[in-house]
Amino acid sequence: MNTPRVTFFATQAGTAPRQIASGAGVRAYFFSDSRRTIQTALGLIWLLVGALQFQSFMYSKGFPQMLTGMEPGQPHWVASSLGWGARLANGNLDVWNTLFALTQVLIGLGVLYRPTVKLALGVSFLWVLNVWWLGEAFGMLFANAANPLTGAPGAVLLYGLIGLIVWPNDRPGGLLGVRGARIAWAVLWVVMGWLWLLGPNSSANATSNAIGAAPSGMGWLNSLLSTAARLTERNGFLIALILAAVSVAIGIAVGIDWQARTFLWLAIYLNAIYWVIGQGFGGLATGSATDPNAGPLFILLAAALLTTVVPSSSADRAGRV
Image (cartoon, rainbow, N blue to C red; front, side):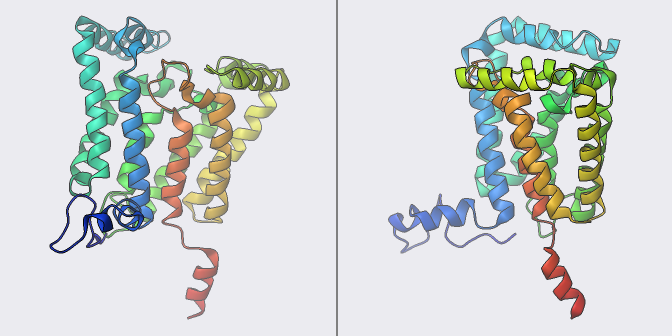
């Protein structure tokens, strides 16, 4: 990926500072192409996650209790590791939580600053594995409690996948390549289709209960969630069947590059709905959210995949040459 000659943080001889600080300079630095735009969005989300980690709730007993609350139903090795992590954090919560927050802020700043993008993304991959295990319990997959509506298979996993796709190199699809990115997308969505068919997600009131339990913190959102929960009562099995089929279709269509743009946009719309009625905007208004949940990350992941898809008209023209 080519780096623009005009940079945001340094100037060449004879370059006026106001030129660098202009809108054109900012666009050239942060939004020079589609890959850089997604890197910028990813960096900003990392900054948001770091900022959320500084909330007073994270310095209270509520944070370790939130971690241990994921233990029920887990295999012994997962539950014991969650308990170990919670005890470690609780031993010196102020220090550990500040370290967690600063790590995420530094990752965000590193992704935003061009010279450190690779270093920041590399660190983020390690951090993602750590948090997906000890902070999200592998998206609750092993506890038979993972629900795509509420964010399964875990938001933090998507940070890493997006980072792989927008890794700064000259290869479309970053470290994964176009085929690898499509395969990863297909696997992710087929797994989500399978999750919809699990008993806890396909019972008569499963969807209604999940919506009713979504975090809120806003009066109007409480009303919307209550209405959605009421409308989906006793329809959980039908909803699960439909969304399982849609999820598998989204995964396979993009995986084999059949009408990929259409299905990527369908994924964007679907996750916008999930983010509102299933995830309550990640509980950002509650004061106890650790991240914005999976909705925005799925949307950003779809945007990253869109950069690898050749529009149908272009493909047709290329085939006629």
